[in-house]
Length: 449
Image 1: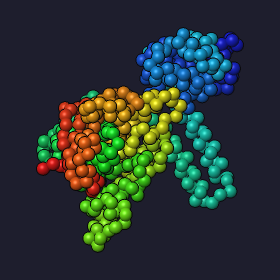
Image 2: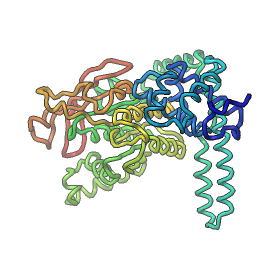
Image 3: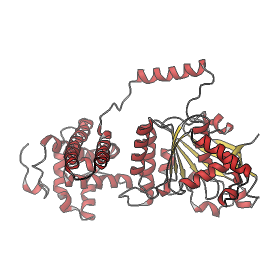
Image 4: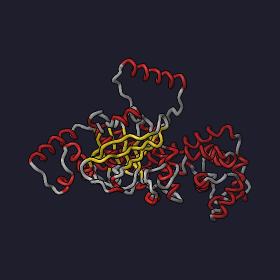
């Protein structure tokens, strides 16, 4: 590669980096400024850590932020953004942006440039891990600590393994035909994760692999109870493996609710430790049931969506795959380096949808609704009430609203009252409303016979 004019080279020397890696990064960034659709593709496939040059990291993040805001991306708009936020020195300014575009060999080779950036990034990561492993081996710590640290390092590079990201249409269609044939021959074959609520199961016929299912409602509607009832049914009746990320409640609080539901014990009695002998007998029975299920709960709060996805991958790997994931709730997750709550929730919903596809299981994510609906005469939720971002509506395969009129009209809260489960969106079927009985005293929803 010919030496660049000094006025066009960023202040940080790039001569020390491998030429192929450098050219690939320059071509990716240049393509992003030439074709907006390639910018969208790049921010879904790459992240700043995969670029080897600090200037490239900054430029990538600037373009990514512009795309997330909905701004147009080209040489002039990116150059103006660089100048506006005072990043001229960190990026090389408009002159280096122009150089990036001049370096583009062909936009039709964009996928090849992206793959090369990924490969070179993986190579660097592997070399860093090898160095770290040698340092761990030479460190004066106990053997068990060394093993734990080495295990963590090895796990961190599992995701670097390249794989097949495309499907042959013949293989995909053949798989679909086999699935339909199996269901026709074996009438009792069940596909997906069933809820245990007959009308909802009739509508969905099971939540499917790769589905992002949003369960939303105002406070006190029973979002957590509803979603956790589904998890309980999945792990007990369907023998599924489930992961629950509870960012609001502790594991102990969830287990107390499970005891109330499965043991048919009033929740107040559990909370106040006021249990009769019959209640204690039920406690033992519930304990024996839960000892046999594959349910894994992480109740750490304040985590980022990337941390959550990493944990989900690790648990799934440890237990040999997962059938369903529940997240309570979206607005308690964080996303680093987002300028607004709307951008943050947009990124989070996109990552959760990607996680569902990657782990091939439905992800049931709870969401809050905007307070604005409290001002309306009719308080049944609408799609526009989803809090912070319309991206949730776009990414979700299904959106279920929980509405109980008794919350507003003060019908007795214990005993049974009616709940509406409003399917506002179902990508693969019909929207509509199903009704359940809510038994708040026992932390459960029930079918209405």
